[in-house]
Image 1 (cartoon, one colour):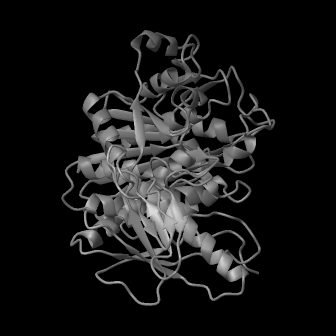
Image 2 (cartoon, one colour):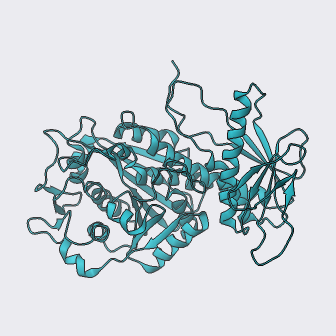
Image 3 (cartoon, one colour):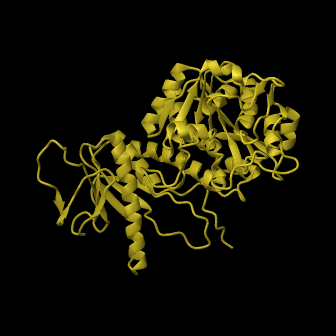
Length: 484
């Protein structure tokens, strides 16, 4: 019987680069919108007035291009938006052709404007590759979709730009795949085994089980995972290119489902907690991409995986948990489980591997969704230059970050009365969570990426589709490239 789960990793479409149009292949064209302060005749193709608005895709008679996609003012990010909208329109047309008994086309060619630079091509390719992403668990055959996009351009660097975009898009798509997988399948063991399977030949993967975690003293991971019949795991990934002079430690939250534990969540929205390991997914996918690109930087990636469940063996508010390395935490709320597993992994990663830079990614706090909404990641950092590097890396790959303050006035709140630190100290939730994590970073340059808002979406926008967005994976790859 065919496995109804989609393949992991998802098979993305192919993008070819060519110098000439091919006869008989459906064609699309990109156009910019006329400037508001310039009087000009409206553009018409086949009797259709073309708006040129970014992301506006119009169907025109088949004598010329079949689709015309608007680029707005022609900025690179508008190319990404146009590419995503175009691939959705092409897939919809393909479905209509199949439903009406027509012959399915599986390729489309796209004429690029002469002014399109390498940056424009990269953004366009990201939109094309990710805009048509779908994840559906079904017993039916998947819907027909375009398999090849042929970019027609004289740009000499277009092929290199497409290759870069393909690596970044693959990281985003794999992050989506892992986060979208339902939690009746996605146990800690499944996530660990899948990471080992997809990592690639340049990455060494070690999967640590609950016995190893107990021997090593991973009290936070064991506490959070103690309420589930599915025991926790630690994923350890290592990429060690010859000659690398800098060592980056990545840590990602891997909560494969989060009920909230005894501090149980409301039923509304709990189904979304299958994506509570989106930070861990981004770390897995980014490490795979960094190795595939051959970036000259050593990377150690750690993803503590656990299911936060309700049972007689679940950890309790009021418990005191001893983390790897000996520091103790007073538990205040079992739904603040992400910081418990991250604390173990941060302490272990720093003591065991002595990295130069530490970055963690997590769907950590609802407070960050309130602060920044659903399209911007919250960034906390102990080092101003590292914060600037993260923000710049995100800007180059189409992911927005906003640096939040590590307000020292709240640092004292983290100090514990009965243990070393408090899990849920008083104060603004996103800031105090970051201050808690900082206690386990040994003063190293460290950045914390809170992606609770942008890790999920309920609608299409730009290259994003409903479900897991894959946010943070591209930033992590680009950050590694900049640090190297």
